Length: 209
Image (cartoon, rainbow, N blue to C red):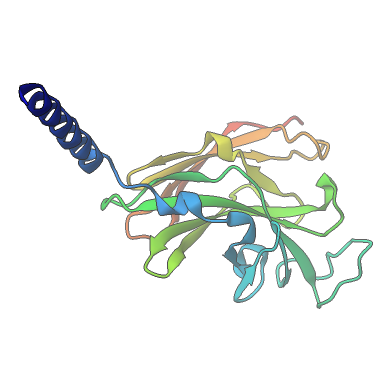
């Protein structure tokens, strides 16, 4: 009987300790379980209106930013068609002071040609968790792009801190080939009230002349 009591007390102690560890652990970020290749994304990231649901990482929008850009073997099914595409990595962290988790999801805009020459632009859609699932906080755009040359983020280098997001941006010089942008900039976006606002963009490496 004495031995059984010791074993029971020991098991109870282990159970209490495990419960305490679980209670002290931060809750799992529900955004990490989102099926991003089939998520709903704002069409505005590629110059469209409303939203578009991705299917296996891709969708289509009618783009006001890139009209008549479509250059695919497949015929367009809408005017001013542009392909919207998801690409890893997604970065997770807490920007807001309340510790609410966010996800930064890279979305590409292309002309459907299937090569790097067809890349029109890229943005990061910032999501937060809501009662109805992922909700859009805002869109972070590249600062070094124009209508002739695109820039994109090295999202593997993205840093998420309370109140701001720090990004590395790659951009092209006039003589760069499609494969290899030689310019680099660091962007700082402030997210004080939930809306991302560009605070600073500093060129850290000029593109090759």
